[in-house]
Amino acid sequence: MLNPIVAAYVFGLLAGVAVLFQWALALGAPWGEMAMGGRYPGRFPPGLRFAALVQSFLLVVIALVVFTRAGMMLGDYLVFSRYAIWFVVGFCGISAVLNTITPSKKERLLWAPVTFGLLVCGLIVALS
Image 1 (tube, rainbow, N blue to C red):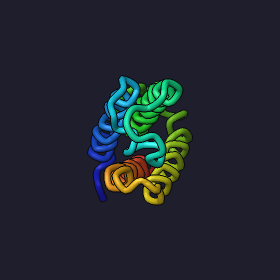
Image 2: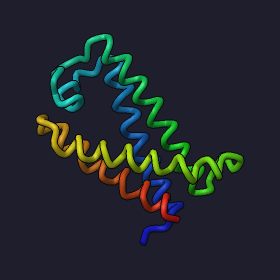
Image 3: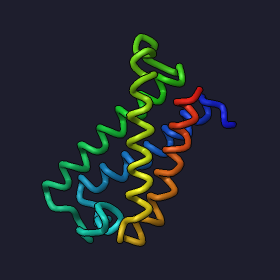
Image 4: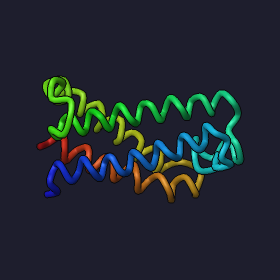
């Protein structure tokens, strides 16, 4: 099984890619067909741009939980992270399923592997 520290780093890398993607959407990148089921091809409308920022913040918080549970930072929150990591695993599981069944082929090809990787890495850290 993968070392939990390595799994946390991989999780952070994958989450970082997703955060950068969300920031790009928020700034008006024309990648809407690769998010939200492809419902908004091109640039997101203003409300969804704000939602992309919220999603990026959530991803950062989730990564902090993973890093904390792996013992890499925020040691004062280690006990909290033992419970919060299961929220992360659940969130990643739901994301993996949704990105696998999305009607957008581009979204499925890009994000299904990423979200599955987040799920596996989160689970490794959770079980460590």
